[in-house]
Length: 413
Image (cartoon, rainbow, N blue to C red; front, side):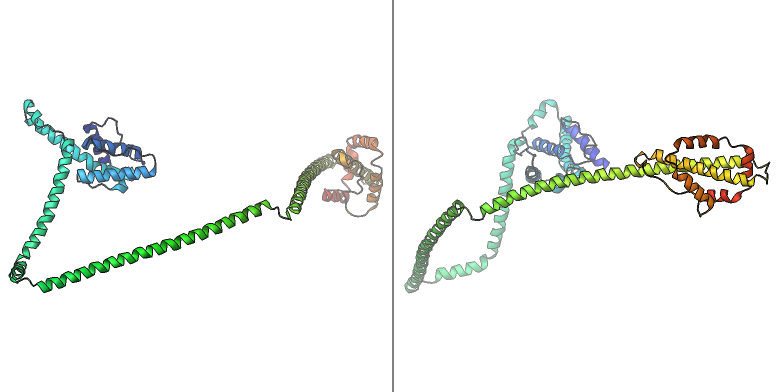
């Protein structure tokens, strides 16, 4: 398909007087309805009395329509159409449509030129109905083909006339012999009698075959009746195992119902367990995050106190600061455990024993004693928290002289 073919088709259809406007975009996709309408209009334009079926709803109807149009164009207009391309109903069908439209368009142009040369009063003499002459044209073509074939046969026979003339003259000149004629007649009669006997034998064989077939049919009918009676008896008798089968089927139904109920319960319990585990995991993560934040806050506070009290250190108060430092660390650990218990209300009854520092020292034992009383002295821990926030810079400067406990607490954090 080319742009020129589509343009020529649309212009020719417009010139021939097609009632609808055909766009050049109609043939980019298969459009069988439009192609069928165009073919039917062109066929009726060529011969108004044509009886081409216009039903193209099913696939079989479309195939029959295309074949009928192609046959009509081949016999009436001597135009060979490609049925496969017409059935595609896309751009390839445009070229097949051009074969018909070009003939009609050229005929219209020729008729227009003749009308321009002939005056108007004489033009009516040459008008005739093409549809009325189609039948005569078909008969003339058939007679022409018969004349041609018979003329060829006559020419072949005339070519053998020289040989046949001699044989004909010899046969005419030879006298007729009665004995030979009688002999030939007897031979012909015998042949006819043999054929008659063969026909009678065939008829007798047909009668025998008919009798044997009737006997077989009767036998089959009897077998069919016996089989039907047996089937009726089998259908009327109830098998012995049907009662047990029905009981087992009821039990199976009950077991299946129980299985469904247990399966639903198990699925629900598994879902609840998963929800509980997820909730506990979230609580643990939240507690760990809070503990980490408190540790970072305490570390920043210690560093701030160390930086503020690093200028005035005293060697005389080292031992007093050691006891105060241990008490401060015990109070901080008590605050951490108390916060952890507040974050996990479901585990409030569980007691946490241990320290954040590693190793076994006297200070760890004292901190362990202080942790034993965490559950009973919550009010004292609140006072300790207030006291820990009011530590003097002088005491915090003495803590700077003791690097070992600080390093251990940092490592624990």
